Length: 180
Image 1 (cartoon, rainbow, N blue to C red):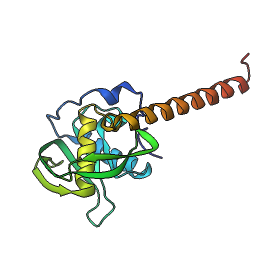
Image 2 (cartoon, rainbow, N blue to C red):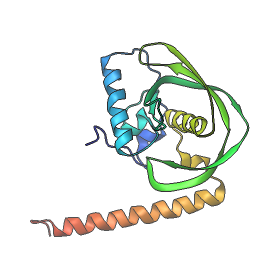
Image 3 (tube, rainbow, N blue to C red):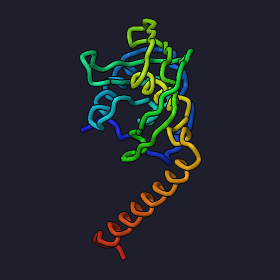
Image 4 (cartoon, rainbow, N blue to C red):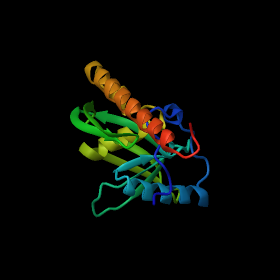
């Protein structure tokens, strides 16, 4: 079982900018380890701390290659180049994805859990994932990256999902013993 529940669209924690990490300690290492397990069980390729309700500038990722899982603390994207359209989803907006335009290449820097500076020149999927996770740390959901037509469709689908979930909850309450 995943150590954390992933926060879903509508949760206010997803709209708040995360605070910079000032101390890498055993609690932060444990958080990263638990986030990696949660990300793998979701399954996903990246997970930012606010998605599990923790307002720290940190994310974990794993592109399911030979390099395994990674943690980046206090990430900063300092350069972007090009443009790439790709279908993008989000663990906080489950089951939905959209074609989104983002820069094709980025330079990301930060620190690892040993306090060492890390620096990446990334393109394609790795660059997109970095941008997506940094957006989470800035309180930005992928829904804000949609064009107007996509945004209208997303709102409609999310409304329908919320209504369906509400109806399901009402049905569950009505079947519970001792309830009128």
